Length: 347
Image (cartoon, rainbow, N blue to C red):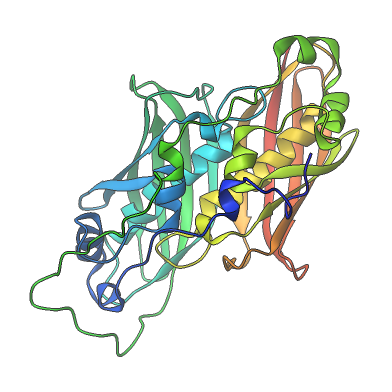
């Protein structure tokens, strides 16, 4: 597989698109600023929207809805949308549900989230997430989310804990009338609107080779990378039985309106590495499906292009279930996330 820093036609290497909220937006009460941003009056859509199409669609008192097109861009080598990728959508609903109840000038950050996966997500249609605040105090916010496909079939359920930070003083006051924000025009469609590459590994390959050999051939460039690699740069770089190292550029394309990498995007890397580690334990003809995922955020990540590195290890692998853990470090070697997950072997 090509190195994450040398892929010529990768989407994540293109000039980034999008923008961020105007400084005065944060001076509003949480629900007001979300409404301003949702209505296109608080700032341009963030880079993550242009990359994936994920966006806030509705806010209420303690509630928030989000959507993301289930494009083939989001698929893994099995042709499915990985559970960790759903965290991009879920994290919007998690955070915004709590944000509707925070005071003016008050920022927040995700401290931990967990997801349980009920069904695989397949490309096609629109994915939606419905978030509900459970508790919002002075320092802590709790929320839950339901992720559904276009047929309103429940795909995942999760909970999140957010840290509510001290108020920011001396922010600019909002204008009496919120101005409309004109989105920039680009010569080509947003990445999520383009045709995705067809890079699924054929079923006969999975049926003939053990998972470890499949991943090794993928790293060597003998098998194609998944579309999610072309979109984000995520890829495995080293594997052995029960272990996997994966990297992803901390590209500004993955930035949220908070002007740093979205927590769900970092979660995607952790899940990717842990699933790959579990795949290395799979026999020919055995597929690996994520069951649940829990992550703790240790520090924010700046979208400066430096590589994030996830090292995952299978702690236990039985006949039907694998339990894994992962640690993500930034380009300076500092830890940014700890994660655990369960995956099921389907024969």
